[in-house]
Length: 305
Image (cartoon, rainbow, N blue to C red; front, top):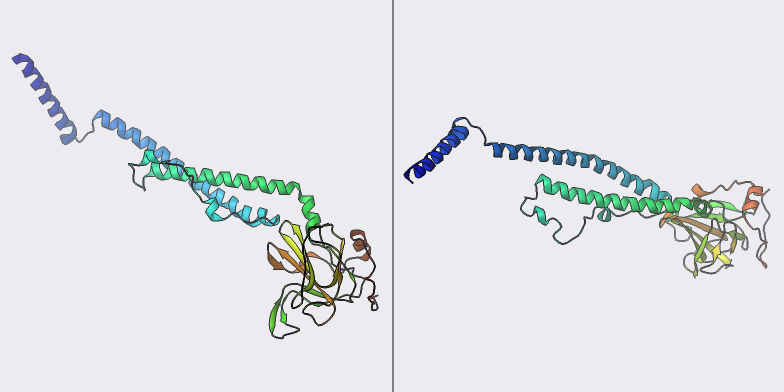
């Protein structure tokens, strides 16, 4: 028994001496500590590499998002996806419970969170591309819907009297923004839809637009035809480019007979002259519209040659 105890004590003493020499004198690690440290270093290197790759993927995804919002969705009149939607994280109860003991700056924890967010952003971008693709398939419909012809037959006695932008208010005076163009003409000249769409509004405002029609063309485009003498369409009615929708007049706030014509893109006023050519060949115009005679009971002035 004494020998056994002595042997055990000697073993412990030898181990303590070995530990002291190995760690304190020689400054070396124990084999298990060395193995764990090397393994931890290897995993840390892999996580760091993953984090760097995610930096690259994040940059690429940011470029795709910018192009999607500013080009692809804009072309088809689609609203941008808000940043708070794109940057939203992934929900779930205690999703990161496994990292509860790690600090918020832990590389492993931050990498896991970034990976989740990138996954969510990539999913949203994928769904956005699906929506854009669906509209691209119907690009022919879009081409027919964009308001791209003059709203009146250019052979009629019409004249561009006021352009888009700021001008002096013809009634009240002072600088005022003109949100469309004015085409001076006689009462009773036919007005045509400038693109395919649905009649959104038919109304009258004696202090403003007078009798007017608003057509929703889809893809972000709308047109307004104002100061009309009469309207021949109803709200909810589908119209094609060139369909007769109204007659020119002198209603509302105006000083003479004319057509006030506006183009809105994504609820912003844009210059109608950017979408049409007032010098279009008459034969080409006749091929795009269903010409109708003047409104009964109205007189025409001499036409331009």
